[in-house]
Length: 277
Image (cartoon, rainbow, N blue to C red; front, side, top):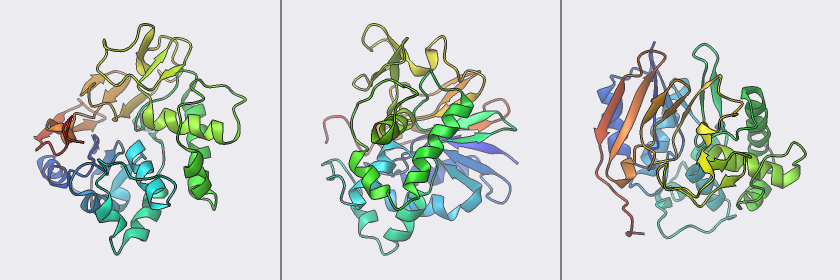
């Protein structure tokens, strides 16, 4: 059995199908992990959702910020952005089934045999694996409860921007959600900067990529993530970064996990470019 991880798709269905063909993916024997952001800004979010859902246990996906945005828009808790391409999902006859399925997906997946964890964006340096799993479960429980609509009303915002053990209520859930779905940079005290989105070297002084914080408590597990298209593909002993900017005309990338990190890429059309919003 082979385990592959694929970076952010964001509605790029044709490229997804080409990549699955390239890796000779066999759902009877293989498993594919998706880093989240299945939907939005690309042309075929509905087809992507249907395809990933249909893979059943052969696919594992974590929630990204665009996935949560879709759920919030669908519930009327957030207005669509002008660059959104979510209309095909919201008007689909199987809309409810797809949205319920999406809402039930985790924020984090961990494979003990591989000692690899999957998230969309990152982990704050204060969390070890056990803490990260517990925090993910807090948000996942709310998303699967009768309180999920209230969660979407309180989900947005940049504060608090540092972890405290005594965080509670919506502030705690917001910080957890931002960690898993929006984090790129933080300083050596663990404070987040959500404005910096460029490649390393362009961030404000005093900030580092979250995975370069020297005292990070999750160093003993390898973390696969997406979200950061300007970072691109990076493979190191304790991280795999997989958002290679398919949406922007670059590539959609897969890595085979648990071996030699074989890389597979397909070229993308570039449906959404800076300045076209």
